[in-house]
Image (cartoon, rainbow, N blue to C red):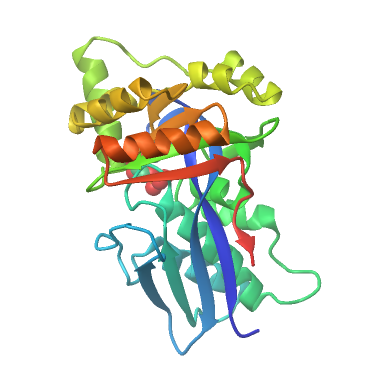
Length: 309
Ligand code: C5P
């Protein structure tokens, strides 16, 4: 096998219910993940040692300066874990072409790790009945980050625990999204920390989150308006507190006709739902003119997880 390329999607959280902080420092979540058609590509190629190269995808304005290229890169860690499990040397060059914003709340780093898991497994486990199943890769991924298993799985799924214990959700049709990316990322631990701080300040202890029934109904019936009304993100007040300018971005999307608007995950990317593909195109054009984002990107979901191409 000479080179393997995997395409992997970004995610937006349709519901991010954040519960109390656990003894291990993580928060108990109800996390409804939705994979959208904004993709990173990862190519794994045999090499003399483990190496990671990162570039922006063609036509993408992703700022890649913050992405580590050494052993710290989550994709490199993924390659190492797959090699360990298969008893081979982790000698591979991983070429990552990024279209998913870096530290943008769309799980771009987790996506690259998921892609590396799938690509390296294919490169080193090339037999009719592979040793490592998709479930094995998701389990290995959970050790790398809470969002990695979902980037392997894709579609729409409910995650509990840290967000890594997944159940696929029933959906109907396609949902049309517009994303507004921001200059500079937000640190996920900092946003969770701000969420805890704001709750403490307000004297509001975290309740155990539950899946929103209206959200699941809207997904199952393909009801875009219902989905727009049911979107929720407990991290949004924290992201807005750390990055107040996002309020203007969210307001602009709502004023310009979005049927749902929220910060994606820990931000700073903002996600807007439109009723049809045409509405999404109109909204994207209007947001482009409003000068409230680094880049305006259209995408639809759900789409499959990390896929060999
Ligand atoms: O699992 P991952 O490394 O992606 O998480 C990044 C950070 O996000 C964690 O270190 C933690 O601060 C926060 N986090 C959390 N609760 C979760 C998931 C993530 O507090 N369920």
